[in-house]
Structures are given as structure tokens and as C-alpha cells.
Length: 142
Image (cartoon, rainbow, N blue to C red; front, side, top):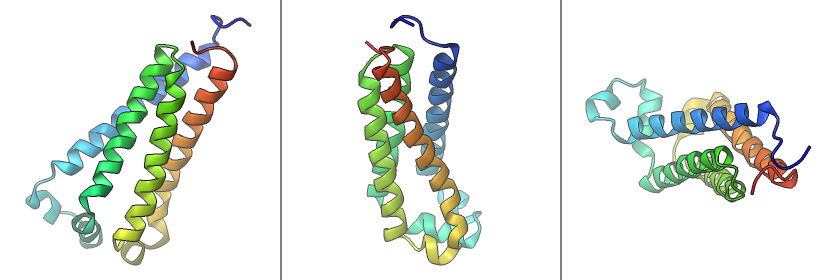
């Protein structure tokens, strides 16, 4: 298989990566644009975590999803810089998760169940970075 011959799964993964990260952008934008009335409608524990979240956590979140979207575009454009952007996204995800649990009462209010979605997000970010590295190693990125 030469550099131009990418499997169909490559394109499927690139499109899914883009959709996943665009969903992350949407959730990010909806969260930072939340009005006090919308926050008041949240369950008490979630509202407390939301209100306790420092703005620097949201900066990390925004950077993670922005780098993820750009990394996905990099895959679609077959560019090597996709690897670096997915790595940046992964690092931002790790910092955001650690920061969220260190700076908010998420663990004490929500318990172990609060780890499920961050773990899924972390695994997907890791998987996308590893996939981009693999694509680069196979010569699929230029």
C-alpha cells in the first residue's frame, strides 16, 4: 500500500473525529453561554460544580476542542500537523480533567460516576492522537 492508498476506515475515522470534536465545540459554547436561569434549572450538584468551575478550566476545554477540530481537519487534508494538534488536544483534556477535579467539588458532590464521561473523552482523545501517529507512520499524511 503506497502513501496515497488509505483504507476507507481512514476517512471514516477522520469524519467521525471531526463530528466528535464539533460536538465538543457545541457543548462548550452552550456551557459558556449558559444564562443564570438555565444554570438554576440544573440539578443542585451539577449547578454547584458549574458555579465552582474557574474560567481557566473553560480555557483548557476550549483549547482541547479547538485543537481536536483542527486535528480532524488535518486528517481530512492528509496533513502531518494533525498529529501535533491531537497531542495538544489530549494534553488539554488531561489538564482540564485534573483541574476540574482539583478545583471543583465534582468528586464530593457527584462521586465516582463523575469520572465516566471524562474517562470516555480522555480515551477518545488518546485514540485520535495514536491513530494520527499511526497514519503518519504509514505514510498517509504528508
